Image (cartoon, rainbow, N blue to C red; front, side):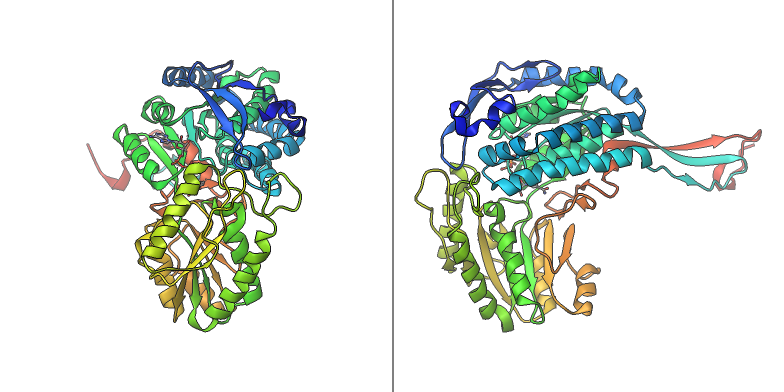
Length: 510
Ligand code: NAD
């Protein structure tokens, strides 16, 4: 166990032991399977976790539901103050928690720390929202009547998250859902349980010292059976699900059957377009981070580079040079100076190999990379493939690995057609200096994605805007803007403060 290795002393600081309970519903427990958490950089066991059973997951929902009336009765700015304290506590644990993200998920340390920072940022945002959350008053057509909207919390929110953002996704959901007055049951990806346990410990310490039941922010660990318990439970009015399109589709149908609400953040097949008038140096730098950052394991990773014919060769040449410099910076994500870490696990390496084989069989040319890197852990080469048509089956799919396909176009219209010609609709970028291109891109005939960028890459969103995508990406929006509305129910309230009873539309019923 890495827990006993002094090099990983930060695990002790976070309360991670050799064997950890994986359930928290106000009390720590768990009597399910004992699973191993594996470091992607070494393939070695970090520590073990006793997962929750489906019955324990159901009990956690009961506890979160019991805590709800007390939590929902606290004034919103006071709930905001609790979230502020959570943000402060996360600040104190920024470094060790960021290190744990690197160790267990496999992303490089600056990104691990960046993820915790994102949770802190959304806490700050939620604190502000707790004092500014708006409601509307509309003019009533009836004399002496008021027409207004009242927003109330939903109750217990289920958050099911993916391995690649093991803390930020929970942060986006929980900080906003909590100030709105909901309690939460979180199911983390089964391969990143230690991050969930460490995060929950931090939040629980704040709740407990404020005399609030810890079950306001409960944790269940486990696989699809535990996830399904949450999805199928009518006591959970909203499930916020982040993960693959395939699982998301099944989850959405189940929730629809019981008329629950779902907030879906699913897969992407993101394109970056470079026009002939673009700043190529800047476009190449952006493409490198978007294609190989997090070893291609962001939902917003660039999977397709759509290049104008006139600049294609020059761009590709520069890109390959940049990729070469990245291969000198491969290493343990916790080490200084490393820019490129491992894939998360062995199935991810297998999926990478299968996709490359399929691309080559379909007539693609490997311009760069294409092989597993021979060292311990789950490392693969960042890969560029050209020569496939935009409609090729493999180009249409999201492979969660650092593979990018090069597509050549003659015009912006063709590039937009390619951008939109996939089932997903998450992130998209255009590099151009033309104001006309910009407005074409952001207008009704432009990108059909939820994230539409100009002269920056496809990944690395800020918390202030709403995050999410269209089509098979699920249509959900999280984080900033008015994403808080997902976590509340809207009541349209009509109040008659007069002595008469006029009907709307001037109807007479007498
Ligand atoms: P996944 O779909 O395999 O798993 C996601 C979560 O669902 C995990 O917690 C898993 O245990 C759970 N789960 C699996 N089967 C379930 C079931 N039947 N019922 C309920 N829960 C179930 O995804 P992953 O491999 O962890 O993550 C990668 C995927 O997530 C990629 O497709 C990526 O694009 C997507 N993603 C999207 C966003 C976004 O914001 N749009 C963000 C991060 C990741």
